Amino acid sequence: MDNKNLKNILLRKLDSFLNPNFENFIIRKFLSLGSGLILIPTIIAAVKLTLHHGETTFTAEINNSPSLFSMALGVFCILYAAYCFQEKRKSLKTQQLKQCQLDQQDKKSLLFFLENMSTDVIEQGIERSESGQMYMPVLHYFDGLDELLNSATFKVRDTKLESSISHFYHSFSAYVSHSEIFTDSSHPNLKRIFKDHEVHDPKWLKNKIEVFQADLKAFSESYKTLISDISEKYPEIDFDETNKIALDDYQKYQSKDDF
Image 1 (tube, rainbow, N blue to C red):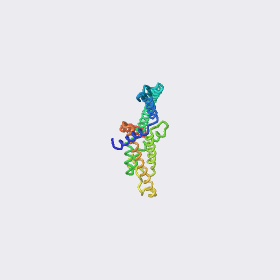
Image 2: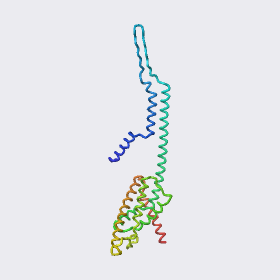
Image 3: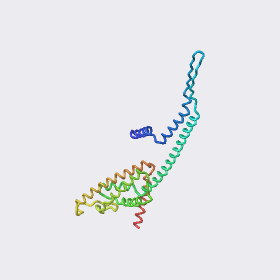
Image 4: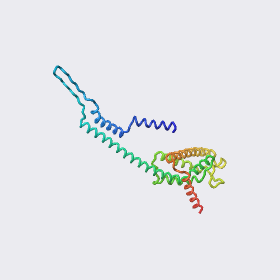
């Protein structure tokens, strides 16, 4: 465990001690009050005062014997604290069960999301674009994700993952929106950026390339963030397995087009 994680844990513990939640506060107060009402009268010693004057003796005694009302009230407070504790446990179990169900639903959605996006192709596409090329299989996966993310059935409830997916999708959309600066190359799966002498306005081309490079950088960063967030939340997800499904889908799509 690194120092940063240890510091965060200690800060959370200190905060929970200094700022207990309302339920814990109520439980502790009723438990303390009940214990006090039952125990305090029995542990304070009785006070006895005796005065002798000649043959006359005066005796005064203060006896702190337990009060039945105080004891009954104390028992009630302890029982109420126990009731609150049990209800809190039930509530926590319900919340944990609900969160577990939501996590499983999110995991299922993310698996389907990844099966529509080959990380190998995305990474190869980013690498190719840094050299001024567009790897065409990337467009196939963008179309699939575009349809998936705009459907009513796809939903991720984890706010951090939802935000990462949203940023990734919008940066992906910007990244593939520069078709006007690309032309065919000798490789069927690659397009290249126009050269200055191939366009009417080289200045226009330069400006467009700069925008594309900025969008490429944003896309690369959002992709890395998304993969990192998914791996952090669901380390058991096997990207090799999802890539196999994504590749199989792409190959079936290609064979259908060839037919």
